[in-house]
Length: 308
Length: 256
Image (cartoon, rainbow over all chains, first blue to last red; front, side, top):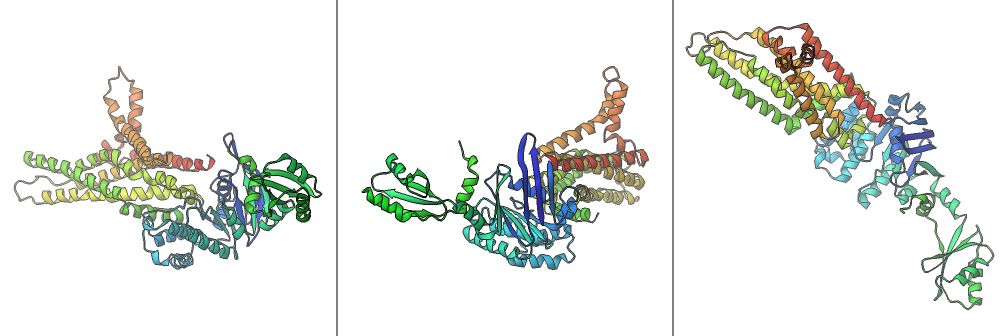
């Protein structure tokens, strides 16, 4: 449904997107993951026809975002990061206004339907300025859904919501993904892991990883890691040497008050490791595998982004 | 066209829920009422014929300050609130957006202009009772008044297009309002350039300043009851050009 090929966007000398390529298939929920300023919003703005790319190509449902911008915009429901609302309109008035611009035939009925979907029927007559942040988000979502678009683009939809609302919204996005392509950006990793079929990780305007959350995890788990803590011997060079000598260990590093042992895949070295430590008369306090989370995958891939 | 209509309806409705629009309407009526009353008093006591166009020339001058107040929010507010991003990702052309907003503001201007007809009704009232002593002796020249209304209506369209343009220049409403006020004032006083002696400013310069001045295109024609096509075209052309520039300016946001 969405196909992006070698997309480049420059703002003056600044390159916001540097030849990114990815795809989102029909009926898929694609998570667009990256730190702030990575280029998520820029990519979405290009896809929604708000701004043209500097170079490269992007198509939505087979239409080019630049040369067939209006056709693309018809296929998309878009919720920008700052929810675009008119404070002086009523909830229903606003949704009907958007429906009219979208050319929805029976806009009254449809507005009622989408407000029902997002659970805002009871506040349909309220002025937008009077409703809460969570409700605004839902009205914004109603706006994006009013013309029943095959592609939905949501820019950080869960930002600023309380945990309860976030959970509701995630469920809602999951239910939407059953009939349409949903692309949503976030910098919250667990969110992408819970909701998405696939994630694209972007950093500094470049795609650094693509795949199902599980796939990405497995890729990293090729190096499984074990945390070892030994009584009174934190940070000892001699122990690092001793551990490195064990067969199957690829790397040993000091980590917090112990050591982080990286091993090759499928090598169960814990018994041997414990035995070696015993033989040397050391007291083993802790020995646990370190689970790889999306968080770590993310950090691993976006490392260059650390503050100096 | 259908999309412009949708935008138009929203913008016009927006004026009726916004306090600033009511304030402008209120201020216009109070200020015009004062000048109307003074003038009427003067005419009655000096046995002069009624003058229906006086309120309109005052109204036209007030628009230098009030048109920016009506138009400054049109694009600036949407840009700041982020709704412009939504509008620009809707399946509508940028020109639809500009036209809808322009006609919405012009329609509200028309409503305010229509409110000034109370003064004409008042004049008709006092001039129709010939037998009554102490009222004006002559009848109101309704033809002149109608021509003046057409002129001031077109002039208002021009001031609104200029205000709309500056609203698209910046996200700051105050700056947008100030810029359009400054430009409208310059276009207004361009007419006075004719008073500058030829030794200081060459007549060519003076004449070109006068030609682009907004005032000169109604003060010597519409306000005297004349509908001069040249002046009609001037206002229409000005509106078209400024709206074209506004559209390009809105489009240019995409390239920034």
